[in-house]
Image (tube, rainbow, N blue to C red):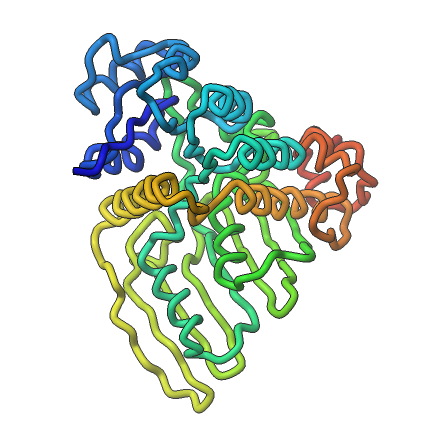
Length: 387
């Protein structure tokens, strides 16, 4: 019998319920042996969810890292607190599966990727949208050349639901500067999906970033982001917002197109896909059976189960996971480049200049840029900018 991978979970917020819990309770060869959370209430919830003993619960994550039998840790705390835990996990010789984004700051993300390589340990990202059936099916259709060469991949996430964080911690943490950004940082899924679908690393980003939905709140971060991304041989477009709006994907190729929509036209990750079709160069439409029409919660749970299985196998087979640290770092740079573009009114090239204040500080460095006077981001007073 294959030895079970012994895992410790650090952070027991809402994502643990709908994502990490199904994976940890389903895979027979992945065993949760300890949980750490700074709040007594969340530790009690975790104890109930996972059927843990009192001695398996820890207020300090360092106590969890000190447990010898733990081979890997899952880090599900807010992103500003992740990097230090990742580095301490490596020092304790633990593999890491980290929630996204990898960090708020590109320079720190690069440091974590280097630390993973130097330690010969795995640092995998929770890029679970790789395993959502609609995107896997689109990826396969592109790989098979169904629409020829990919020209433009447009991802619509205009109806992202603004779920609050765990009340026992801080329900509005995603709307603070500490989150490293707003809806685009929260749904960084779109950034890594664009790169994955195109199959290349991004070279340029142009964006508009604003906060019309929450203008009355004097927001610190954005609720609307519109991006255009240039790759060596193709382009991607991301439309994203907290609120109400179209969801799905439109993929244009040299010999046709692919279109996908969700139930009630919601955004990806918040409902199940109900329509997927291709149109060839002669305008003939072909409807494609969607691989999985389960309820959204079940599809999300399945994506986490597949992600955990990939992480487990990457450790066992000593290979890279589907989303290694480098992929997390590139996705973060796309997001930060979008913020920089929106503030300066210019196209931003990738990879970011290591001397850039945004590379070194994330959104805390935005105010040090050459801010365009007519920037919508500046007018909204986002990222510490004066109106």
